[in-house]
Amino acid sequence: MTLTTVRPRLSPKVRLRFDRRTGRHLLLYPERGLELNNTATAIARLCTGEWTIDEMLNHLARAYDDVSPNEIRREVCEFLDVLADRGLLQAMS
Amino acid sequence: MNNEHRPYTLIAELTYRCPLRCPYCSNPWDLAEHGNEIDTDTWLRVFHEAEELGVVQLNLTGGEPLLRDDLELLIEGAGKLDLYTNLITSGIPLTFERLSRLHTLGLDSVQVSIQSTRSSVSDRIAGAPSFNRKLDAMQWVTALGIPLTMNVVLHRENISEIEEIIALAERVSADRLELANTQYLGWALKNRAALLPTREQIERARTVAAEAKMRLRGKMEVLFITPDYYSEYPKSCMEGWGRRFIVVNPEGLALPCHLAHTISGLRFEHVTQRRLADIWHHSAGFNRFRGDDWLPDPCRTCERRAIDFGGCRCQTFHVMGDADMTDPACSLAPGHHHIESARTQAGRTTGIPVLFEYRTGRGCSSR
Ligand code: SF4
Ligand code: SF4
Image (tube, rainbow over all chains, first blue to last red; front, side, top):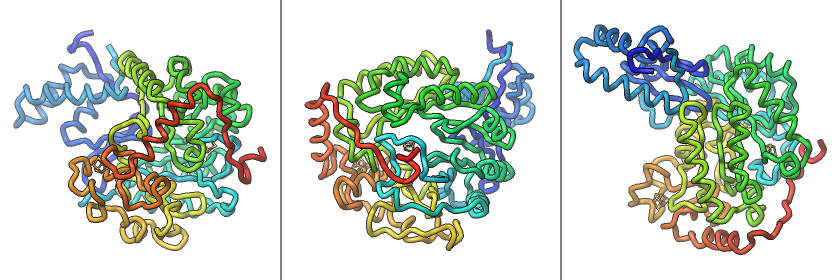
């Protein structure tokens, strides 16, 4: 598997929930949760199993044209790592 | 909005009743006095008020929550509030049909606790034949596609089984394995001499758990919760007093931690008498150990106070007789010698079988 062909998908145990108190999103999983910033929410939403990481990067680059592609790449890699670490990602190839 | 004191998790202790009687059970000692459980409507109102306060995770626990025959209604109500609902259970008494119904109604995850990987040991520790039924329960959970946490409370008698425990968790396809060292509170404090492992046992288990964590990354989360009797500093108890968690006990008492009301001199309130938000923000008990002002020396000037908040108030009270001191588990605490002597005793008594004192009480010993 290489970066270009992996299609990350959130594990079915994960639930994204809008948080009225902060206006942000929470990613909930058994007995825990992560508070997401806007980019992380956008990334999480793209983890449907349909998009490769390259496609995700392109998509985000269009949505956040004020952020450099390198910065986006770094954020995506970091966040996917956080998710993978907690067993919240399934990789579809 | 200020999120410093915002509860994310409601721990709903639905009942003290339990078909098992583990010697490390953290339920209060005076169990037999606890008669009146709050009813379905009160619980549903509490869920609603908790969600308004910011709660997003709901842990249904006990005793044994499966003994509540309104569990279906409670899970359905929690689902309507979009709470992430976790059932924390011994797996008994359960059928596949009931579990499947609970899942359909909105149950999100299940945690099953086992006492040992050997059925005879497990049944002896639990005080009742239960191991095979727990295995069934875990298999049903994963068969239904519900994320499963397998929880094992580690103590001297089962800690050497760590490899088998990990293998069992893999075999039942657990999603998370919680290797929780006993917290020496409640019944476990009474049974401490029989339960506390030696330092060598802890170190070995820690190493094995760390290897498994690496190997299983992405597949199964392996959590090893170090006992504070063998760490330099205490754990952050409940991530801070009245900060992230609300516990509501079977009678409707709202608490910062499930044993908070065992600390004498604190005043807590019932959800039947006051709105949860008022209790959370304004009750004397919830405010008692919030923030920095109450902190004793040496915590007052210690950098770790933002991490551990001076440790566990209940442990401090039950070991020191005074909840306002530094947790004796901390190596900097004036009362640390109490913990050191328990450790020394653990080193001396290795190999000598010690009898457990079983918990007694209505609904526990009679089943
Ligand atoms: S006796 Fe065991 S299973 Fe029952 S509530 Fe206590 S720890 Fe849990
Ligand atoms: S002195 Fe207090 S704040 Fe510092 S590590 Fe010990 S318990 Fe924590």
